Amino acid sequence: MQQSEKIRFVVYTTIFGILWGAAEMLLGTFLHMVQFPFRGALMASIGAIILCLGRTYTPVRGATVCTGIVALALKMISAGGFKMGPAVGIMIETLLAELVLSVFGISRLSFTLACMLCALEGVAHFFITNWLTYGRGIFKAYMQVVTGLQKFFGFPDGFWKEVIAFWVIVHFIFGGAAAWVSIKAAKRLRKL
Image 1 (tube, helix red, strand yellow):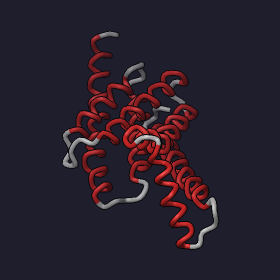
Image 2 (cartoon, rainbow, N blue to C red; image 1 turned 90 degrees about the vertical axis):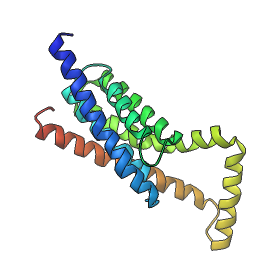
Image 3 (cartoon, one colour; image 1 turned 180 degrees about the vertical axis):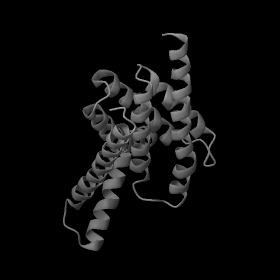
Image 4 (cartoon, rainbow, N blue to C red; image 1 turned 90 degrees about the horizontal axis):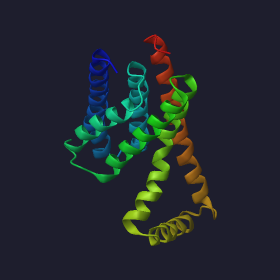
């Protein structure tokens, strides 16, 4: 890598990392404070858009990871304080996007796949984080609460499956919207 390419790499990964980190610090903290539903999917989608666009300016392996590290550093000093869940989410999304963009290059397919994986990461993240934090018994406790609520409100057995399906579909929609925005923005910037 030549000196000018190194400078470009540092500048663009830092700019896009600061953009994502600022979004996490400001919007993410606000959404968390107001208990906005699907805030994780929204923030993951915003992050995916920024990662994809950042990669168009720095089409070098490792650029996406550097962007994510900058964003994570800013998130760690946000007003909401350090929270393990969002920090882990940022790094997982970063690694997923890096993998997709490194394997498939910069294309509509890679943007779509990266955005979808980043948005859907929140679903797996919820289950894994709860399991690691509280142990296997947490899901049994959740099912007891859900079963009690189903009976109390008169919902049919298995209603929880419909709720989880809805939850996954909403994450899928956020990912699709992020992919659409990424592709449109990259075209407008004449990078795709």
